[in-house]
Image (tube, rainbow, N blue to C red; front, top):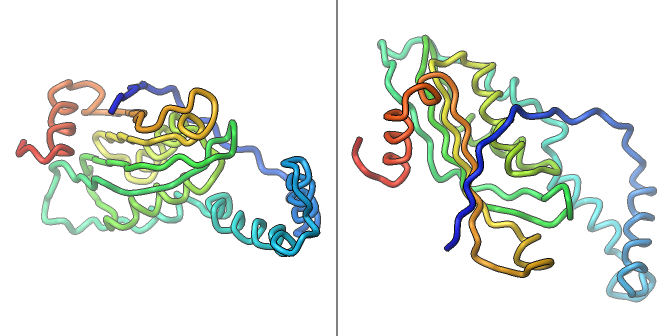
Length: 208
């Protein structure tokens, strides 16, 4: 499997917009069905606009959720633990903002606590919040990193995302199996290459 590795710039935040009504959204789906070359009034497609808008409400539910709120409960009684915390292989699915087709993969998150930790499931929740938006993998990686940094003020954060993009396998160049890898490091991870190597080793299951 080929891999493309990218380093990242700071994330940009989406600008709030006025949402159309459900009826307007369903009308837009009917237009797209016609654009694709089919008849939205035929039996198999009659309920499709309602199904698509309902699916979009779930697939893009991240716009209505706040990562800061998900990370708001910090546990400070950790018996002095200050070593690396790693949650790896967090599965996710998202949609490319360029073509609105899926990309999916795994996220790996590590941080060095500085006085507090969060519940491990909260890190997976943060991934889900940002994944359920129109995204680029690069932006998503940066957003996850910044959300954890802002909430916990840790001594360092490391985020790595591995994903396959359907915009490469379903259209355009049409090459399946290519994996894109993005990383973002702050604090200790950014300043000490040995910590980056430890992070990569632990992701691979090598005792560090």
